[in-house]
Length: 208
Ligand SMILES: Cc1cc2nc3c(=O)[nH]c(=O)nc-3n(C[C@H](O)[C@H](O)[C@H](O)COP(=O)(O)O)c2cc1C
Image 1 (tube, rainbow, N blue to C red):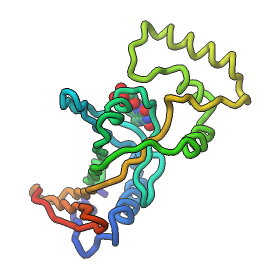
Image 2 (image 1 turned 60 degrees about the vertical axis):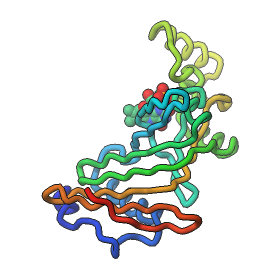
Image 3 (image 1 turned 135 degrees about the vertical axis):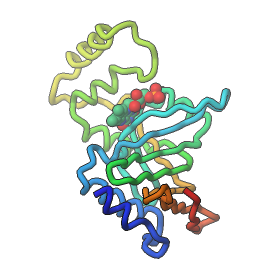
């Protein structure tokens, strides 16, 4: 499959009308290729005070013309960094098919209704886990984490509705650039980047 995509390459005239349509095409091809968790993406944020970047994997849960959505804890490192500096980068590492997509943009909170609707689709145990874990803060031990979870499981037994934790929710990333990278022979990879200018998307080719 990797060889097939490398041979075919990515040409300007084959691109979809807009970047989200192109993303949809590649996302569906990544899923069809059998890549494990094609929706896993590396999210990078930067601490505005020090400039220090940080990265972690999260799962893409939804995308459409408004942007890319993932869910997390707003009090986590990424959540705190985004509150002060909403500039963000997403990277989809689809190595088995020699592809990579990089999205740069700005993140904003999803609405509480949208967050709640998604939270209710999660398994009961994950809902409790969201309450039990004050993400990115220090915890004394594994036992402490298990105790917190146990207390919550006693308070909200299976079948009982778990409220959405106030610190938990979605980020929607509004893209300003989306680069589609296709691995080719002799390191002459194809890199086509959509960049938003006012309300139009322009496509530019970058040297590999
Ligand atoms: C495959 C995979 C998927 C993950 N998905 C999520 C996710 O959707 N949301 C999330 O908050 N953390 C997710 N994590 C955990 C994050 O990588 C990270 O440890 C956590 O969000 C805390 O990051 P931070 O301290 O930099 O904010 C995932 C980790 C892996 C390996």
